[in-house]
Image (tube, rainbow over the protein chains, first blue to last red):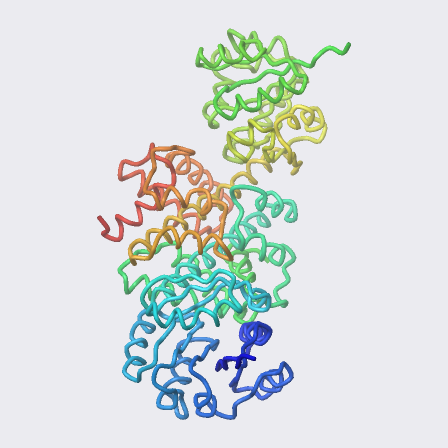
Amino acid sequence: MSIKTKVGFIGLGAMGRGAVSNLLAKGFDVVGCDVRSDALDWLRAQGGTPACSLAELAAQVQIVVCFVVNSQQTEAVLFGDDGLVGELAAGAVFIACSTMDPSYVRALEGRLASHEISLIDAPVTGGAVGAERGTLTIMGSGTREAFDLALPVLRTFGSRVHYLGPAGSGAQMKVLNQLLCGVHLAAAGEALALAKHQGLPLDLTLEILSSGAASSWMLADRGPRMVAGQFDDISSAVDIIVKDMSLVLDATRESRFPAALAHAAHLAFLGTTARGLGAKDDSAVTTHYELAAGMP
Amino acid sequence: MSIKTKVGFIGLGAMGRGAVSNLLAKGFDVVGCDVRSDALDWLRAQGGTPACSLAELAAQVQIVVCFVVNSQQTEAVLFGDDGLVGELAAGAVFIACSTMDPSYVRALEGRLASHEISLIDAPVTGGAVGAERGTLTIMGSGTREAFDLALPVLRTFGSRVHYLGPAGSGAQMKVLNQLLCGVHLAAAGEALALAKHQGLPLDLTLEILSSGAASSWMLADRGPRMVAGQFDDISSAVDIIVKDMSLVLDATRESRFPAALAHAAHLAFLGTTARGLGAKDDSAVTTHYELAAGMP
């Protein structure tokens, strides 16, 4: 009988829970931390082990998966009071799955290396559904040695696990991914608001636009909510895409790359949140265009 | 034995030939006109009847399909020297499949009505392949009576034949379609140029971006040519999308609709043609971003 590998897991939100379920189902032990006590109750009910502190978690594992929201939370998990750094054993691997600024990630690798911790920068795409089904696309990067250690873990919740190069490459790829997601989402909002402005039948418009060369994943997924004008069923909030597009703009500015469409899309999301819709589903971007065009 | 319905057909380019092949295969007689004599030879070889003039064509038919390039050519076909108007019998139906300005189309309906000719505004999407296979999406509009007369003809080369409302609705829908095509195409160029700028592996980048929420029809279709940097295999030229996006901008200006993404995409295509790449495949828009970012 083999001894199960124990994995540390931080951040038990919708994405994290999906990943943990797959880790447990595929033979790993999971010791987890989250700021919310109901998340720890959930973990215990799944057969995992809640930890009372990051230090308690760090004492038990060589590999930690981190599914927090952004670089600020990642920084706190690692270097905050009661953070992992100083507690994790030499040789540990820290797998960061959050969407973060590539330049922050590159610097982080060096900061962790001085504590003999390897960073795997591994943002994901595929949403909560992909995490639950174990079908996430994972954009992995870091040293090849650390990536090989992380791979069995990543394969439990990702069906397309890619190795892209040095740490920061994963974050760069996620930036590209979000650039296209943001532009396609805003474009769907722009086109459907224009259709409404012109009095075209909206259901049929969406059917036609989704059927050919004008189609995108975002149009097919968010288009029906735009047509219905229903933004309370939240798949991802406007404020999240504002944050992601801010990362895109930061990365393009740092690269001295003039990304005109990314900027135009960002302005549409900013305009949406400026109207008080930041907590609504991101398909609400179509209302930015409606209001800008003087529609009621 | 039934007598075959004879249809007039003007514009035997790649799209037109596909449509004619389907008309002939599905039991219509076709009498055709084109400015190029090799196109008339092609029509004869297919079993159709070339006409020496538009007047000769007009004398034989009650329904005409027009697949010329734009509104200038449509205007010449109808109102130029030896044009159809004055020759077509009262009650004839003119089916315009070109991509044209909606306001031009709306005015055209009235101008034709005064000659007792009904206009069916029916732009298409699906490309030459769709025309050949009879699988075009057709955005039909005009009076319901005329549309019913046109329907058996349209169904020979379109598998999704929609009725959208008054003449001009089809042109409006095509404008929306081109808006999204143009934005998605430029966005693919922006993202892949940025990936190249950052030294990411391009084939893998395209695979990852095409696999999830960042995907679009344009990225999947034009992305491989962008990655290969190969723009001589021309599916559709940069100058065509410049023309189409100009129609989009005209339509949004007329509607007082601030379509920021459409404008940003248009500038990318203009920048591409300004570099002397207007006759290249429209995937060449990625070079606009490369050059703008100072890449060699």
